[in-house]
Structures are given as C-alpha cells and as structure tokens.
Image 1 (tube, chains in turn cyan, brown):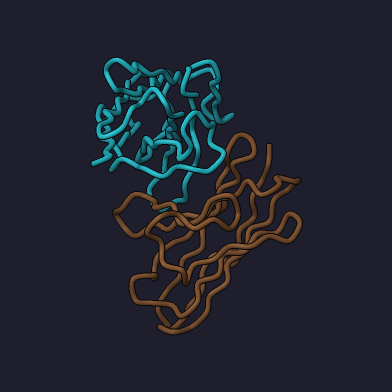
Image 2 (tube, chains in turn cyan, green; image 1 turned 30 degrees about the horizontal axis):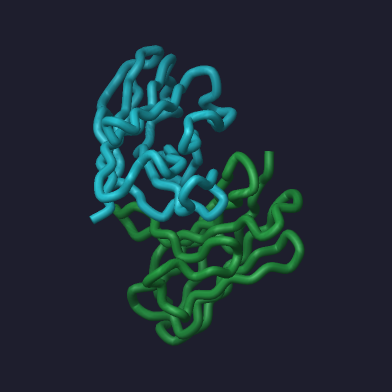
Length: 123
Length: 106
C-alpha cells in the first residue's frame, strides 16, 4: 500500500525552529517529486514547497521562502521540511504529498497524501 | 504568481443535482489544472488532473473542462458522499490552489 506518514509537528514559540518528516512506503521515492502543502485551521489549502525527484529543482511559496528548507533522503524513503523563524501565521496542518507523475514536477498534481502533522506557533 | 479565483465559495444542492464549480486563472496555464475533494478531517483527494483526466477510481459523474483560462468541475447526479469541499490547483508553475468551494446539502 502506498503510504505517507508525517511527523515532527508540535507547539513552538515564534522565532523558533521545527523539522517535519514524512516517511514514504509502498513506492520508490526516488522516482517522484514530493510536496508540502499546509492548511491553517478553517482555511483552504496552501502549497508550501516542492522538490524534484533528483533534488535539482526546488520551489517555495513566497510566504516561506528564506525560512523553510525542503530536502529528501531517498535512501531513507523520507522527505523533510526544516522550518526556521516560525511565525504565528505558519500555524497549520502540514501535509506531505507524492507527485502523480514519475519523474514529473507537479504537472499532474498530488495523488497520495499523508494524514498531516499539526504545527502550532504561539507564545 | 498565478492566482486562481474559485467560485462559488459555497453551493447548496440536493442529491441528484448537477453542480458546477469554476476556477479562473490570472494568466494562461494551458491544461495544467487539477481538482481535489476534501472531506472534514481528511486529506485532499485527487479527482481530476490535466483539466479533464479522471484519476483512477474516481466516479465518472465527475468531469472537468476548460475554456481559455476558465476551468470547470462538474458533478453530475450528486451523491451523498459528494458533499465536501473542492479545490482547484494550477500545476503550471508555483502550484497555487483556489480558495475552495463547499458543497452543502440543501
């Protein structure tokens, strides 16, 4: 079964850091671009970041650029999101997602999603 | 950045109705558009990709179309399990989402 499981969320003070992880199983992570998408409480979906299957192309939403870093370790079947200088507006449920197309780059959307991990930024 | 304007923000409908949801892109995105369904407390689910291609396992009552920079998701013969929130996402560049449309029971 293709599955993604996020972890690493929690309550953190403004200005601090947090690292999210996403463990993949049931497919070859190497072949797919991966994404982070977040959803603030009661709000819509917001794309956060994407990393290509070879890690040679990375993109960030303007709202997190310069503060968040996406990375992957294909040998560990894992995706990461390092979040620095966190702000209250970063409070959200963070989903990792698998790109639909092998060796693509978000062309056809996200076809597998994790259950999400909650990040709360508050003093 | 490409903006996606989704309408309506909510719609009330009955089982058996046809529901139409629209997304307008702020610039040309070709056919690079996907639609998702999200139910409360659940992760989104991919319904349609590349404007009109149905994701595996999605019922054929869901369909997508395009006219220029306007994209439409049509749900024919609405079923009880279709009451949810729907999002479009442009996958052309810096993949932005529309604001969502909540389909509610009339």
